[in-house]
Image (cartoon, rainbow, N blue to C red):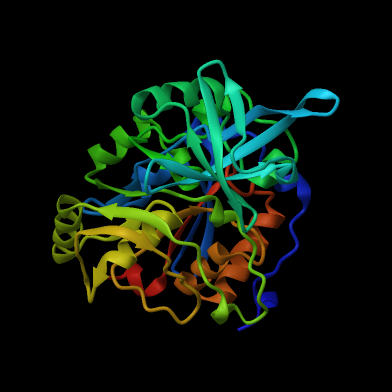
Length: 354
């Protein structure tokens, strides 16, 4: 299975730099029974069945992009350098792993000042990353980060425009509760309160799980034989309550539909046979064609990058030939791609009749 099997041509004009407004007004490509239909996200209550269960990722994106100043003494006196930092993940002991630009202008032991209320000491540098110890912790850190930080927009959006205040709302789901992600579970960005209420009135149920999406979600696949690719690990949790809800829905004949690849990867990581067990820890599950899905019946997701692990995941669910057809249709009909783009609801034929 070659990386080139998952390539396609995507016109740059189809990369969305802003979300639809309202969120639920985005287009929705429905792939079911081998066919394709053009719908909108607000059609979901009419498409889904009473008894279906949507699995939502309630992770909360932190404003992980920081701009600060490093100051050191030289023969010419005090010299400062502007440093851009992107937080990656917390590590034991209260420190954070981060990326920095330019990394070469930093040394261990130096301090980066981001705002009057937020600074960090460089505790270590290695493998292209920093280990940072911040000047504040707990709720003080959360407040200082909210004031000084910007949302960590994906590189394909950040290359087209800088983050702004609108992104602090736009790049966050309406059910975000647990801080820790540095990228949004983007399929969930299409949901708003009226849509959630309409789905509930239809008899669709919800379960919340947590997977803190890391910056590794944007890392390119660098091996030609995709089966040798190694996924980045991300922390996730499926509570006993969520596991029981999912299992009860399956036992009653309802469909389990993760909203986003993050929720899908997490419940598949927690699945044993055809049941979901409570789970807490890191997952590096890599889903590509040939994978046997344990509990997932369908998937709501956005449109993914060429040659990406997420495109491989949806190919595993729907089959490579159908995904090529779906993506060809999406490009021809000018669907908007990636994090702020439109959505798809992918229902494999074998699951539609179940």
